[in-house]
Image 1 (cartoon, helix red, strand yellow):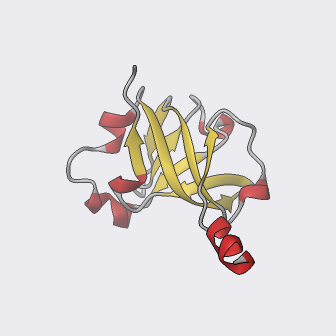
Image 2: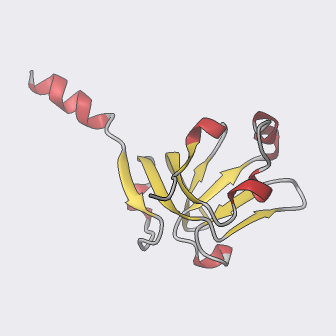
Length: 116
């Protein structure tokens, strides 16, 4: 029974606010990060960055959609649709240049939170 509980705890997703200070302790964790999208930037190589603060450098967590995965976004273009929306992104946290990011491969990893 103890083994079953330990296994169940491994699959628990942690929800955090996007404004929380980032650190590298969440690397490899399955997280859901929620907040208001302040900016969505697309690089020259067609990588989309979803930032919860206006500047990418200040964003505690960044959602990243690589060019090869943009084909999965047929219902909307993230840059046009997500800016200003309250969203939650879910996925495994990785660290790039000492900053945490969640790689988004599918629109299913993004949930728009409706205002109450």
